[in-house]
Image (cartoon, rainbow, N blue to C red):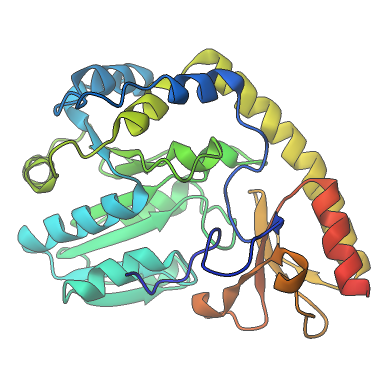
Length: 330
């Protein structure tokens, strides 16, 4: 059983207002709910996921062979870390503060873990035998590195993977250009508010170097049979549909409005807050917080990210904001 700390569901009391999860809090589109309910659970999916890979490849303008389905982002991180080790890579670079699964996967495999807080720390570092992780935008900060930084970080690295789980929830600025040498990890379930449906996919680079070709083959070899459930396949097939993308654009507008209101509420309470291009950001209360779980409220303590005294707080509707405000003021 994993000991890595995450936001969202845990074994504690029921959460009425969950500020700890990065999932889209808006009600999902009806067409998605209907499609998931209609998923045929009586049969195995196609173990090769041909239709799904063709569908996603067309959406991204790549070849179907470049699309590798995974059972969520966490499974992809574990599998690509193992594949990198089997291909002779010995180091893993992870951003700090950053998502804990990158480091956990490296440590479990005995890979040498190296952390970087700024792009400059990677520029002159030897990376010819390294897997480099980039979370863009970053969890937990909501910061964005930009195109130049991605190009600089990936230069000289044996393997660079850009985790784009939160790109669909970007609320400000343009997404960076992804260097052609980089792998990409897409996790639509967060943006669609269905984190319980474990479904994601990797995109192999168009730059088909010998290492990338070997890695693609190794990732396929390491995949379990039917890596995606029927529901997972349906979720990914729905992802690029026009009505789903229209709903997502509308939800970003709503999250911008709610986020501005929530930031003002926290500012009025004396909280220090960092900038972010996502619906979540880092915030620090002026004093110790009261018991929130007893009131059905959960925040994500950022101590495990190396940020004691800070919280990663996600945007929720005004009713949840009011509940948080009342508890703190009381």
